[in-house]
Image 1: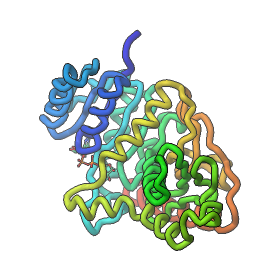
Image 2: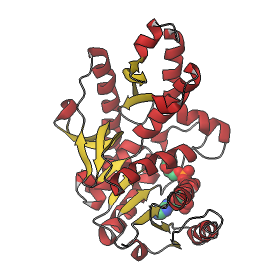
Image 3: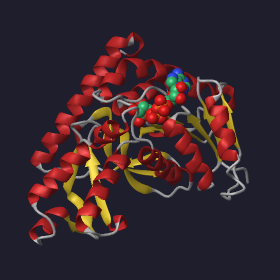
Length: 320
Ligand code: APR
């Protein structure tokens, strides 16, 4: 049986890391696409040459021609520019919106049956715009944010509790920005909710609040440390988890930026919610009941995303 074809649109820091992970995990063959001629070809060849030592079997091709992504099963989009210190994700809106237009058209023309995962920021607005520009079904276009945000939350929690990350689950909802909503009530260590762990003396409410804030600022912390780009290892690993769930029909329950119609009081909008990802793409949105304060935080986050979508429509009249 032919190996799945995985197209990576954008061969920068995240794109290159994605290609390496796809090859190491033998998820399929890789096409790396970028407009910077030489970069995708160089990275594809470098990773292909790692195959014998890996060892792994995968073919990798670098290209500047959209025709090469023809028939891709999965497209992961990182094309665009990342943040510099002092910039918010929202500062990237104007430039990355133009990139989403060309990427959306390229995917529609060459890989209309693909499952598309957008990583480009500001994520919730970009995934919406990418869906609009590509015209693909909503369930086949989603954004990677929640898996990353909850992975950061889980990492900080596991470190605080000195337990395996594998036993820490966490939910982060809402937009991928300062208003994201880490849900402590639905986050657990081996099934024990965080508020109970505070009662048990495992941590204090103050420490937990600080971890929640660090999670919200997780991307900015890396941007500040790197000085010349944004995070790429954790974002790439998170998107691979989503792609694998689709390719292997695992039906993992993963938070991602999905099109929500009906649930959470939303009427057709992209925002971070728990979903089930399987061979149909985003097969289900898990509609969990939120407490009053949680709903208020979620609504605030949705409002922030709505503001970005409005700005997209003002920049590009065809989206209105
Ligand atoms: N089509 C294809 N590729 C493009 C386009 C385009 N129109 N415009 C830019 N690119 C490419 C760049 O040439 C570069 O190789 O996108 C790549 C982006 O790579 P990096 O600058 O290394 O950025 P990266 O760290 O990978 O982040 C990419 O993901 O998390 C988000 O905020 C981040 O929006 C940023 C994106």
